[in-house]
Figure (tube, rainbow, N blue to C red):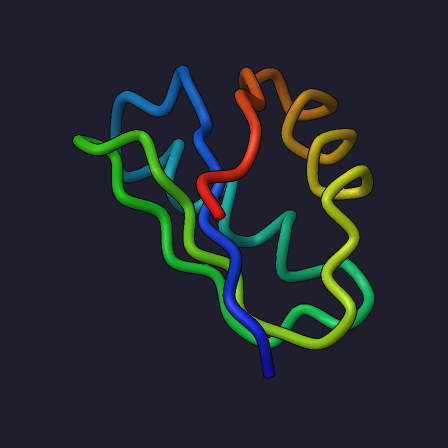
Length: 70
């Protein structure tokens, strides 16, 4: 299993955190997602993580995807 950390702007509350986590978890190969509101980071664990699909998902629900940190 691999881990990827991405920057997501626009998460202001626990509801935002839940929406981001829930939607990214729906993607194929994703096993776990943990969003940190204060750091504006989302740690994604899984196999064959498709960052383009993550970007499309994040932007599709109204947040700004700023790229990965690793």
